[in-house]
Image (cartoon, rainbow, N blue to C red; front, side, top):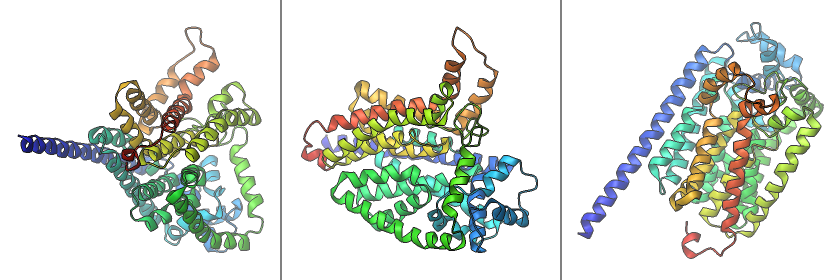
Length: 450
């Protein structure tokens, strides 16, 4: 009788894993096919990749990659894009806004002509994100494989802009997710160190706080963080020296490029007058909703810091004080994945880092009760409101709406255009509370092994 029951339970578990994988596969197929279709039909495809590819080509020719005029010369000479671009597209493609360390990833692509380079970039972006998603599904499948497949498949199916625009966040976040899995599972650790180092080299603003978790957590995790830091320095230093040799003023030029993007009405301005901060790939940091009431960079930056810094300090304190368990790690990473989007500039596609929240969500769901339901609803809402398909549907509807029912214009603007930072803040606070809750008791032997 016990053998029969055991066999039945194993069959149910096997079927659940199969169904979860099918859902993950469906989301991956939608992500790849729809992303490729959008990239082929877009009037301005791969703008973000252009912004990394052509400055790297400039560096290869011993030109200043931070000088807009020098990059523009190469951009126009190659003749793939340029003359038909809008002024905004041309600015995005020729004003380089990344640190020299990013060349460690982009320079190999810049050695190739545009055709094979962009195809390889798109292929690696899609493959790496799907692989990272599968690793997270595998970590969450021990709790609820079908629900894990639903959540992750939904996130993937809502990520087409990573392919359409060639966002480097796709590769950086995927590398970070692979590194997290390697560190927590204690498998393929050298691969994890290299992946995290490359991720930090490209987009430290996306994955730096994830790295900080491992530094603060202590023990073996701190060792991995320090090894990653050393690897990052090794990768970045040659490109830093190279950039300084061809562009001695690169720091001032980088600052000028960033200021041009963040100027009032600029592409990265989070305020109402922004030329590129809203719509698809919108700005999702807290500056966006705050700027509706105070459209001044000093004011909305300070207000954002006043909200986020106390939460980050609490998170750091809990990380330092709580014993190392896998449960603790997933909850700590879930809270920081959401909170890291808020204090400084981030866009919709950066929120794919929320993949790291799925195992924590499923752990809380397995506990049941209101906590489990809140975790699930928070994840569904955040995945939806950071999704590309969601906003492709909602934005045309929002543009047709008007002020009604006594709501002020400002409140209506927040409710219509800026719900994403608010759900991320809610999600971050919730997971921070769940994270702090486990620090109030001594870990059992079972928890230490999970």
